[in-house]
Image (tube, rainbow, N blue to C red; front, side):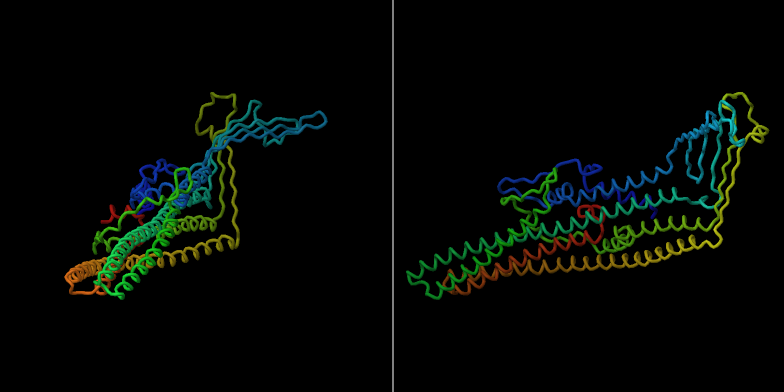
Length: 490
């Protein structure tokens, strides 16, 4: 895959995260509802994190920084205007006046187009600097034929800056991906504790009603004192569980508040009456064929892989520049056009250029080339290090994806088991309660069945949440932020 196509893919992923991205942030506002009983849905939560979270906004700024790097590198190709005046007057005598006005236009093949006007005069002017009174117009080229012909510093700087842009886009995706992964896990932890509190509130309410019924039944002789102690103990046990879950809910609510910010960069408090989405029933949306596709993808397009790939591109341009240092410096300044500023009628031809030109040649050759050879070997060593790093990162990403896939698949199967266990626990509780109503069972057995049912409900809830977290981890392992993997890979 070419660098251009990789950049296009990275840009598509980032642009798909939001309907509209500004250069230094996003241009739309997402608000959290605070009315009683309103649900903070998972998609709305993720959209808000992308839009307003400080870490997300920091990531968006990286793109602007990379563009400025490229602009800075392109500045080496900016045309430049120069004017210089050098004169000497002594004891009433004008020794010399040298005026030079020039325009230099750098071009891509390591050359500069130069044109200008020289006006020199004076009593003691160097004969080689003599020009007509009205000035001498010149135009020509300054070319590097040895070192700098195939690659020079300004071309290398631009290519390195363009590779840096690719690294920046990959880093943006990496930051957003990690942020959304952690935000997803914390959201589902909040949803889990919220649902646990509701389950335990229902269990406590039921235990209290049964305790009151038993207390009334003791007066009528229907229940014994042991039944009263059993019922009271169950109420206390469920109160303790509820208090622990309420404390956990407060902590997870505060933790989730770290992800909620408004468009002005101010943190938002999560309203107490706002509730989360209920963890959905696990559904497999990724097939085994998808895994093979994802494994191939992470080897070439995972942000960690791309960062190392673009780093190798940078080192390649540095290597090409360093190899130029092994060549001799051959600089040629050739100005085939020389003409008086007032003479605009002289016909141009071969005879004219033979008699009116300026030529300069400079050759410089270091004899041992130790500086150039040392620099080149350093870059080659860095390249070898980066190649080892790339091989390791690719294998590491594959292993992480396979581990995430196994957890995703196994958690789905586990969720099915706990779902069936919940159904069985419900049947046992209902059957035991019916027997109790018929006088064929004891309160102790009913209490045991109901306790098992509450534990099964909580375990089934925990497994549903674990599945959502495993799916979020699978998105993270692919290297594509959650919300894009569904549309691109399923």
